Image 1 (tube, rainbow, N blue to C red):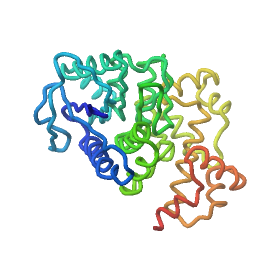
Image 2: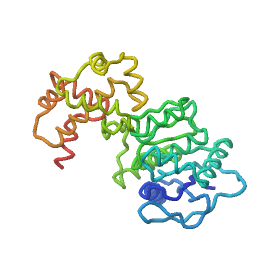
Image 3: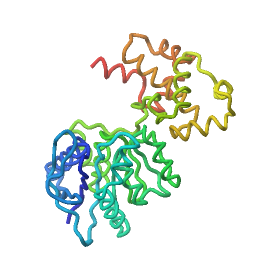
Image 4: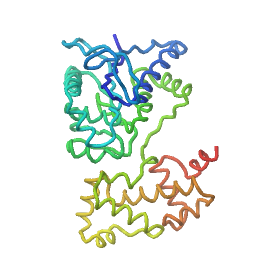
Length: 325
Protein backbone atom coordinates (compact mmCIF):
# COMPACT_ATOMS: atom_id res chain seq x y z
CA UNK A 1 0.00 0.00 0.00
CA UNK A 2 1.13 3.53 -0.74
CA UNK A 3 1.02 6.39 1.72
CA UNK A 4 1.19 9.03 -1.00
CA UNK A 5 0.30 9.28 -4.68
CA UNK A 6 1.99 12.13 -6.54
CA UNK A 7 -0.22 13.16 -9.46
CA UNK A 8 1.86 15.06 -12.02
CA UNK A 9 0.50 16.95 -15.00
CA UNK A 10 2.73 17.76 -18.00
CA UNK A 11 4.34 21.17 -17.59
CA UNK A 12 4.20 21.05 -13.79
CA UNK A 13 6.61 23.28 -11.90
CA UNK A 14 9.78 21.18 -11.76
CA UNK A 15 10.90 22.41 -8.35
CA UNK A 16 7.49 21.62 -6.87
CA UNK A 17 7.69 18.05 -8.15
CA UNK A 18 11.32 17.66 -7.08
CA UNK A 19 10.64 19.04 -3.59
CA UNK A 20 7.85 16.51 -3.16
CA UNK A 21 9.97 13.55 -4.19
CA UNK A 22 13.12 14.70 -2.38
CA UNK A 23 11.27 15.23 0.88
CA UNK A 24 9.60 11.84 0.60
CA UNK A 25 13.01 10.32 -0.11
CA UNK A 26 14.50 12.07 2.92
CA UNK A 27 11.64 10.88 5.10
CA UNK A 28 12.11 7.31 3.89
CA UNK A 29 15.83 7.36 4.71
CA UNK A 30 15.34 9.01 8.11
CA UNK A 31 12.34 7.02 9.34
CA UNK A 32 14.41 4.00 10.52
CA UNK A 33 16.33 6.27 12.92
CA UNK A 34 13.05 6.90 14.70
CA UNK A 35 12.01 3.25 14.41
CA UNK A 36 9.17 4.24 12.09
CA UNK A 37 7.97 2.63 8.89
CA UNK A 38 9.28 4.44 5.83
CA UNK A 39 6.77 6.31 3.66
CA UNK A 40 5.83 4.59 0.41
CA UNK A 41 4.71 6.50 -2.66
CA UNK A 42 4.05 6.29 -6.38
CA UNK A 43 4.10 8.86 -9.18
CA UNK A 44 1.18 8.85 -11.63
CA UNK A 45 -0.02 10.89 -14.59
CA UNK A 46 -2.89 10.74 -17.04
CA UNK A 47 -0.89 8.92 -19.72
CA UNK A 48 2.11 7.52 -17.83
CA UNK A 49 5.68 7.34 -19.11
CA UNK A 50 8.05 10.30 -19.11
CA UNK A 51 6.12 13.40 -18.02
CA UNK A 52 7.69 16.66 -19.21
CA UNK A 53 8.04 19.30 -16.52
CA UNK A 54 8.95 22.95 -16.69
CA UNK A 55 12.46 23.97 -17.79
CA UNK A 56 13.06 20.83 -19.85
CA UNK A 57 13.02 18.33 -16.98
CA UNK A 58 10.90 15.19 -16.77
CA UNK A 59 9.78 12.50 -14.34
CA UNK A 60 8.71 8.92 -14.89
CA UNK A 61 5.14 8.06 -13.96
CA UNK A 62 2.67 5.22 -14.24
CA UNK A 63 -0.67 5.82 -15.91
CA UNK A 64 -3.80 6.43 -13.88
CA UNK A 65 -5.62 3.09 -13.73
CA UNK A 66 -8.68 2.74 -15.93
CA UNK A 67 -10.59 1.22 -13.01
CA UNK A 68 -10.55 2.48 -9.46
CA UNK A 69 -8.84 0.35 -6.86
CA UNK A 70 -8.85 0.56 -3.07
CA UNK A 71 -6.51 3.46 -2.31
CA UNK A 72 -5.96 5.02 1.10
CA UNK A 73 -3.01 7.14 0.01
CA UNK A 74 -3.03 10.93 0.13
CA UNK A 75 -2.93 12.30 -3.40
CA UNK A 76 -0.48 15.18 -3.85
CA UNK A 77 -0.72 17.54 -6.83
CA UNK A 78 2.33 19.80 -7.33
CA UNK A 79 1.94 23.25 -8.90
CA UNK A 80 0.84 23.25 -12.54
CA UNK A 81 3.65 25.53 -13.70
CA UNK A 82 1.26 28.37 -14.59
CA UNK A 83 1.18 31.78 -12.93
CA UNK A 84 -1.67 33.75 -14.53
CA UNK A 85 -5.42 33.29 -14.33
CA UNK A 86 -5.64 32.95 -18.12
CA UNK A 87 -2.90 30.30 -18.25
CA UNK A 88 -4.55 28.29 -15.47
CA UNK A 89 -7.89 28.30 -17.27
CA UNK A 90 -6.21 27.16 -20.50
CA UNK A 91 -4.33 24.39 -18.69
CA UNK A 92 -7.44 23.07 -16.95
CA UNK A 93 -9.33 23.01 -20.25
CA UNK A 94 -6.98 20.35 -21.65
CA UNK A 95 -8.14 16.70 -21.74
CA UNK A 96 -5.45 15.40 -19.36
CA UNK A 97 -6.53 17.96 -16.76
CA UNK A 98 -10.12 16.80 -17.07
CA UNK A 99 -9.05 13.19 -16.55
CA UNK A 100 -6.91 14.15 -13.56
CA UNK A 101 -9.81 16.11 -12.04
CA UNK A 102 -12.16 13.16 -12.51
CA UNK A 103 -9.67 10.85 -10.79
CA UNK A 104 -9.25 13.27 -7.88
CA UNK A 105 -13.03 13.60 -7.53
CA UNK A 106 -13.44 9.82 -7.46
CA UNK A 107 -10.65 9.50 -4.90
CA UNK A 108 -12.36 12.01 -2.61
CA UNK A 109 -15.74 10.34 -3.09
CA UNK A 110 -14.19 7.07 -1.96
CA UNK A 111 -12.99 8.69 1.25
CA UNK A 112 -9.46 9.61 0.15
CA UNK A 113 -7.45 12.72 0.98
CA UNK A 114 -5.91 15.21 -1.46
CA UNK A 115 -3.32 17.98 -1.25
CA UNK A 116 -2.28 20.68 -3.71
CA UNK A 117 -0.24 23.86 -3.83
CA UNK A 118 -0.21 27.01 -5.94
CA UNK A 119 -2.13 26.75 -9.23
CA UNK A 120 -2.86 23.06 -8.62
CA UNK A 121 -5.44 24.17 -6.05
CA UNK A 122 -7.52 25.26 -9.07
CA UNK A 123 -7.63 21.62 -10.18
CA UNK A 124 -9.25 20.81 -6.84
CA UNK A 125 -11.73 23.60 -7.46
CA UNK A 126 -12.49 22.20 -10.91
CA UNK A 127 -13.53 18.87 -9.41
CA UNK A 128 -15.70 20.48 -6.72
CA UNK A 129 -13.42 19.71 -3.79
CA UNK A 130 -13.28 23.18 -2.24
CA UNK A 131 -16.93 24.10 -1.57
CA UNK A 132 -17.52 24.76 2.10
CA UNK A 133 -13.84 24.53 2.98
CA UNK A 134 -11.13 26.90 4.20
CA UNK A 135 -8.32 26.84 1.65
CA UNK A 136 -5.35 28.81 0.36
CA UNK A 137 -3.36 29.25 -2.84
CA UNK A 138 -0.74 31.65 -4.20
CA UNK A 139 -1.55 35.03 -2.68
CA UNK A 140 -1.88 36.76 -6.07
CA UNK A 141 -4.39 34.14 -7.26
CA UNK A 142 -6.57 34.17 -4.14
CA UNK A 143 -9.22 36.56 -5.46
CA UNK A 144 -9.73 34.51 -8.63
CA UNK A 145 -10.08 31.30 -6.62
CA UNK A 146 -12.67 33.00 -4.42
CA UNK A 147 -14.53 34.18 -7.52
CA UNK A 148 -14.61 30.68 -9.00
CA UNK A 149 -15.67 29.06 -5.75
CA UNK A 150 -17.63 31.56 -3.63
CA UNK A 151 -18.67 28.72 -1.34
CA UNK A 152 -15.18 28.37 0.13
CA UNK A 153 -13.14 30.67 2.35
CA UNK A 154 -9.81 31.59 0.75
CA UNK A 155 -7.31 32.39 3.51
CA UNK A 156 -4.79 34.17 1.29
CA UNK A 157 -2.48 34.90 4.22
CA UNK A 158 -1.98 31.25 5.18
CA UNK A 159 0.87 29.09 3.91
CA UNK A 160 -1.01 25.82 4.50
CA UNK A 161 -4.68 25.12 5.22
CA UNK A 162 -6.00 21.75 6.35
CA UNK A 163 -9.76 21.24 6.15
CA UNK A 164 -10.90 17.65 6.46
CA UNK A 165 -9.45 15.55 3.62
CA UNK A 166 -8.28 18.61 1.67
CA UNK A 167 -4.91 20.27 2.30
CA UNK A 168 -3.88 23.31 0.29
CA UNK A 169 -0.78 25.49 0.23
CA UNK A 170 0.43 28.79 -1.19
CA UNK A 171 2.84 29.53 -4.04
CA UNK A 172 5.06 26.90 -5.64
CA UNK A 173 7.77 26.79 -2.96
CA UNK A 174 5.04 26.29 -0.36
CA UNK A 175 5.19 22.68 -1.57
CA UNK A 176 7.89 22.28 1.08
CA UNK A 177 5.50 23.48 3.78
CA UNK A 178 2.78 21.26 2.34
CA UNK A 179 4.99 18.17 2.51
CA UNK A 180 6.02 18.90 6.10
CA UNK A 181 2.34 19.16 7.03
CA UNK A 182 1.50 15.89 5.25
CA UNK A 183 4.42 14.02 6.81
CA UNK A 184 3.42 15.29 10.25
CA UNK A 185 -0.19 14.27 9.73
CA UNK A 186 0.64 10.80 8.42
CA UNK A 187 3.80 9.91 10.38
CA UNK A 188 3.86 12.28 13.34
CA UNK A 189 5.79 15.32 14.51
CA UNK A 190 9.17 13.58 15.14
CA UNK A 191 9.66 12.48 11.52
CA UNK A 192 8.43 15.77 10.04
CA UNK A 193 10.68 17.69 12.41
CA UNK A 194 13.70 15.53 11.57
CA UNK A 195 13.15 16.04 7.84
CA UNK A 196 12.82 19.77 8.43
CA UNK A 197 16.06 19.91 10.40
CA UNK A 198 18.09 17.77 8.02
CA UNK A 199 16.91 19.68 4.95
CA UNK A 200 17.01 23.08 6.71
CA UNK A 201 13.37 23.60 5.75
CA UNK A 202 11.62 26.03 8.08
CA UNK A 203 7.90 25.44 8.53
CA UNK A 204 6.31 28.80 7.65
CA UNK A 205 2.83 29.73 8.77
CA UNK A 206 2.00 32.73 6.59
CA UNK A 207 2.44 34.07 3.06
CA UNK A 208 1.97 37.66 4.23
CA UNK A 209 5.70 38.50 4.51
CA UNK A 210 6.11 37.69 0.80
CA UNK A 211 3.19 39.58 -0.66
CA UNK A 212 3.66 42.57 -2.95
CA UNK A 213 0.50 44.72 -2.69
CA UNK A 214 0.92 46.15 -6.19
CA UNK A 215 0.71 42.61 -7.63
CA UNK A 216 -2.56 41.80 -5.89
CA UNK A 217 -4.79 43.87 -8.16
CA UNK A 218 -5.02 41.04 -10.75
CA UNK A 219 -5.23 43.59 -13.53
CA UNK A 220 -7.89 45.64 -11.75
CA UNK A 221 -7.08 49.23 -12.73
CA UNK A 222 -8.93 50.78 -9.79
CA UNK A 223 -7.14 48.68 -7.19
CA UNK A 224 -3.80 49.34 -8.91
CA UNK A 225 -4.49 53.07 -8.59
CA UNK A 226 -5.56 52.65 -4.96
CA UNK A 227 -2.35 50.80 -4.14
CA UNK A 228 -0.19 53.36 -5.93
CA UNK A 229 -1.97 56.16 -4.05
CA UNK A 230 -1.43 54.44 -0.69
CA UNK A 231 2.25 53.85 -1.42
CA UNK A 232 2.81 57.46 -2.52
CA UNK A 233 0.94 58.82 0.51
CA UNK A 234 3.25 57.23 3.08
CA UNK A 235 4.10 58.22 5.75
CA UNK A 236 0.68 59.88 5.93
CA UNK A 237 -1.74 57.26 4.55
CA UNK A 238 -5.37 58.30 4.16
CA UNK A 239 -8.15 56.74 6.19
CA UNK A 240 -10.52 54.34 4.44
CA UNK A 241 -13.16 57.08 4.46
CA UNK A 242 -10.77 59.58 2.85
CA UNK A 243 -9.70 56.99 0.30
CA UNK A 244 -13.30 56.31 -0.67
CA UNK A 245 -13.98 60.03 -1.00
CA UNK A 246 -10.93 60.57 -3.21
CA UNK A 247 -12.08 57.85 -5.60
CA UNK A 248 -15.68 59.13 -5.55
CA UNK A 249 -17.40 56.12 -4.05
CA UNK A 250 -18.86 54.92 -0.79
CA UNK A 251 -16.77 52.97 1.69
CA UNK A 252 -18.96 49.95 0.99
CA UNK A 253 -18.36 50.15 -2.76
CA UNK A 254 -14.65 50.64 -2.18
CA UNK A 255 -14.56 47.57 0.04
CA UNK A 256 -16.41 45.52 -2.58
CA UNK A 257 -13.94 46.46 -5.33
CA UNK A 258 -10.89 45.78 -3.17
CA UNK A 259 -12.17 42.43 -1.94
CA UNK A 260 -13.12 41.31 -5.45
CA UNK A 261 -9.62 42.06 -6.76
CA UNK A 262 -7.46 41.07 -3.79
CA UNK A 263 -9.55 39.11 -1.29
CA UNK A 264 -8.68 41.78 1.29
CA UNK A 265 -10.41 44.66 3.03
CA UNK A 266 -9.19 48.21 2.28
CA UNK A 267 -7.64 48.35 5.76
CA UNK A 268 -5.80 45.08 5.16
CA UNK A 269 -4.56 46.43 1.81
CA UNK A 270 -3.23 49.52 3.61
CA UNK A 271 -1.53 47.35 6.22
CA UNK A 272 0.01 45.29 3.43
CA UNK A 273 1.41 48.45 1.82
CA UNK A 274 2.84 49.57 5.16
CA UNK A 275 4.34 46.16 5.87
CA UNK A 276 5.91 45.94 2.41
CA UNK A 277 7.49 49.39 2.72
CA UNK A 278 8.69 48.70 6.28
CA UNK A 279 10.32 45.44 5.30
CA UNK A 280 12.03 47.09 2.31
CA UNK A 281 13.43 49.83 4.55
CA UNK A 282 14.59 47.34 7.19
CA UNK A 283 16.32 45.18 4.59
CA UNK A 284 17.93 47.92 2.49
CA UNK A 285 18.70 50.83 4.84
CA UNK A 286 20.38 51.52 8.16
CA UNK A 287 17.31 53.21 9.62
CA UNK A 288 16.48 52.00 13.11
CA UNK A 289 13.05 50.52 13.84
CA UNK A 290 11.72 53.80 15.25
CA UNK A 291 12.73 55.62 12.07
CA UNK A 292 11.19 52.91 9.88
CA UNK A 293 7.96 53.16 11.87
CA UNK A 294 7.86 56.90 11.21
CA UNK A 295 8.42 56.33 7.48
CA UNK A 296 5.31 54.13 7.25
CA UNK A 297 3.07 56.35 9.35
CA UNK A 298 3.36 55.13 12.94
CA UNK A 299 4.11 57.46 15.83
CA UNK A 300 6.16 54.83 17.61
CA UNK A 301 7.68 51.46 16.82
CA UNK A 302 5.32 49.49 19.04
CA UNK A 303 2.53 49.52 16.45
CA UNK A 304 4.94 48.44 13.69
CA UNK A 305 6.29 45.59 15.80
CA UNK A 306 2.73 44.48 16.54
CA UNK A 307 1.81 44.62 12.84
CA UNK A 308 4.86 42.63 11.76
CA UNK A 309 4.35 39.99 14.44
CA UNK A 310 0.70 39.58 13.43
CA UNK A 311 1.13 39.64 9.64
CA UNK A 312 4.70 38.45 9.14
CA UNK A 313 5.08 36.24 12.19
CA UNK A 314 8.34 37.91 13.25
CA UNK A 315 9.76 41.00 14.89
CA UNK A 316 11.25 43.65 12.53
CA UNK A 317 14.81 42.84 13.59
CA UNK A 318 14.55 39.33 12.16
CA UNK A 319 14.47 40.64 8.60
CA UNK A 320 17.53 42.77 9.13
CA UNK A 321 19.35 39.84 10.71
CA UNK A 322 18.53 37.65 7.69
CA UNK A 323 20.05 40.23 5.32
CA UNK A 324 23.08 40.88 7.50
CA UNK A 325 23.79 37.16 7.68
